Image 1 (cartoon, rainbow, N blue to C red):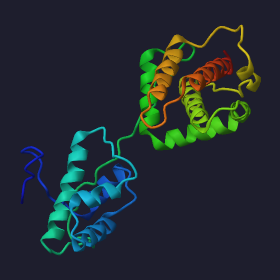
Image 2 (image 1 turned 180 degrees about the vertical axis):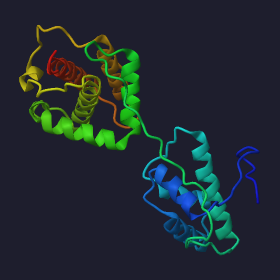
Image 3 (image 1 turned 45 degrees about the horizontal axis):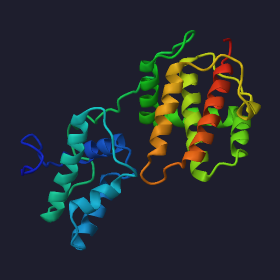
Length: 255
């Protein structure tokens, strides 16, 4: 059993078996199972490649784990499997006899506690953002609710004359705000007034915590390394998102 020289004394390159690696790959969001990983590694070895050529191709994006131990086990198993391939050793993929090691369990993510009937705190906004980032199923469900319920608002946004980058920023930011309100206000939201994007309202503004989230997100969009928003469009996006947020806040049921 070899140890990696660059990952610390506790990092042991060891393939623990098909069931364990399959479970870790699933937790990491990889579409591959152990059999496909093994095939890719054998092809890379035949082409003179290295483990660093293969492993990044197993994931659509950088895998994230809430528990660093699971991340460590994933890479221990992947590099252990690579070592077996490099040494030309047989890798058994069929089920083994006897008891199996426990398969890693996916941690069940919990949504943030609702702020209803009050207003969202900064802690709620942070927790809601992290929940949307980490729970793919919840994000998809909330995206469908946003697109179906706020199609009028999205139509008005589409007609605002933004560039693709500006429209993408505004649309995604309004989705996040809509999702936060759905998570924090259990009665739900009605369709927001699409005409609200054309004018300012005399109604009370949305909570400061949500407006601060908008400010931070637009600051990041302004300084994006690949597609920064131009100052003129940034001002237009800021106005549209601010008006859209106010409309969504007024769309809460039973407020």
